Length: 89
Image 1 (cartoon, rainbow, N blue to C red):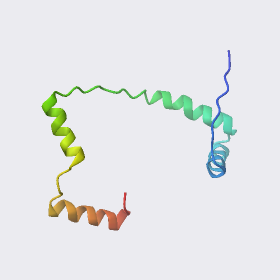
Image 2 (cartoon, rainbow, N blue to C red; image 1 turned 120 degrees about the vertical axis):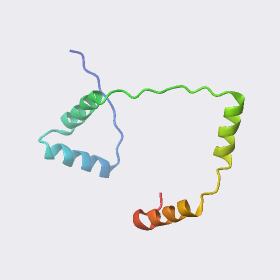
Image 3 (cartoon, rainbow, N blue to C red; image 1 turned 180 degrees about the horizontal axis):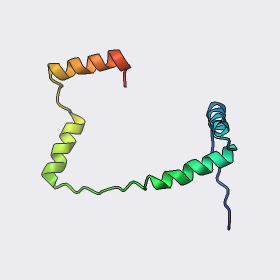
């Protein structure tokens, strides 16, 4: 079986966290990353769908993206409550 080398750039904290997680499972860092990568295949590869809009729909979508409507008072209150509980997003 042919092998390849993959380079992964991590900062020191990320590397330490991954090494700790690997050790918790009894793996080397290489074994752990390989296991994660191979297990992610089971989750499937996400697919992208192309959506085609006619000129009117494209203009409508653009107007909402560039100038979204103002949230009603109930939604504004829910946003404030959420931000107080969970922080800003």
